[in-house]
Image (cartoon, chains in turn yellow, cyan):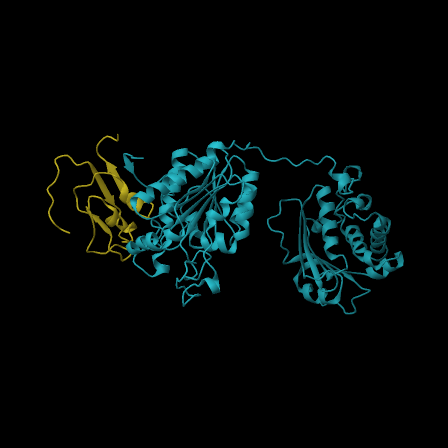
Length: 83
Length: 477
């Protein structure tokens, strides 16, 4: 899970996890097509292992956003123009 | 529907200030619960159509009872299963609003099964979101109408059986047998593909209401990892494997393209000819008028009328409030009685007020009209010091205990008997009270009697009773 990925020259998207809103259900991790999300080792304020972005490889597809049941726990940005 | 940014919808509150406890940023739902996913889809659609400010949610009883914590819209939380009925009223009163009904399977298919059937059959122009997780989640996992055969719940510990509990109810199929609904679809809140379908269905259902196209319902198969006692990620597989074969996905009815928009005007009430039909000639009857208060203290009375059933206790309350309304007061009438038509006890709370009335409840009363002994014993302690106590001395053979209230003993039943019927003892009390306080104009109340007593042949007798009650007070107090 912690394998080192080679950063892309130009990232296509980015995902931000609001740690204290995440309940660690794991849906985003399962659904992410790029497999760039993992459960953190540490705990958040509520005692859950929150989801964590590996830091590279997000395409900004938004699938994790809809997989996540929390209104504001995930924020996804597409860094390339939407076709 | 790709976007540049996927973020918390503006139809949600920024902070969930209404939520109790220190955490104001996350929902109260369990990890992996499907409610949040559906909330996000609805919120996103409200943002897209720009209808947040005219949206009214009707929330159920169930886990989503606290929906109003999250949505920056109008919110009403209603009794168990009654959301479609309340939504009907809201939509008819506010045809321009977007009324969204949100219910779980216990609430919609169990407790409120008939409500949804009737609202759908009337083709109310509302949108219903039906969250089906095959279980009563909030109360701890009891069997719901949608529980699967063989599924173990706290009330089917050996598993649901066809013989004992019957097979699950398929709501969209059931409703699709009706003529009126225009769009009924079942979606599943599981993988990315199904989530996308669900988003489209939610959007379509809300758009249908924006365009005034009648009754729409989206059923969402939703995970309840806590109730099912499995991990969230396994719960989505469970929906695919167990629920979807029994609850097939897709649109079960979609005639949106073929229906005309329903005009968004309130349905007016036509009063023409109604008076004749109901044998009321209200317009030709004198209206009661305000009187001159004999004391300032008599203003804005909180009245309690009590006696046994059959004495016309409730009618006396109606008479007070009807006359008060005609005279231009704010009024309220709250009856309380047993199931018996005669016998038993009855009381009612009446308020006649210049300012608007906050609550129709009368706990501490300014006036108690006690028509029998148990009523006197029960309600005498609730009269405020300096208040007024009228009692029927022909039936009450005990003395009141209070010495800090004004007591008027009126032999109401005796006076009524002399007129010809004991039944108008209530009107004797009415005359007595009005004469004492001056809250209403006595003559106009007598003349307006046909507007609140409908049986024509009893009118002269009742008019006489009011006059006699007033006369008794004039002569004796």
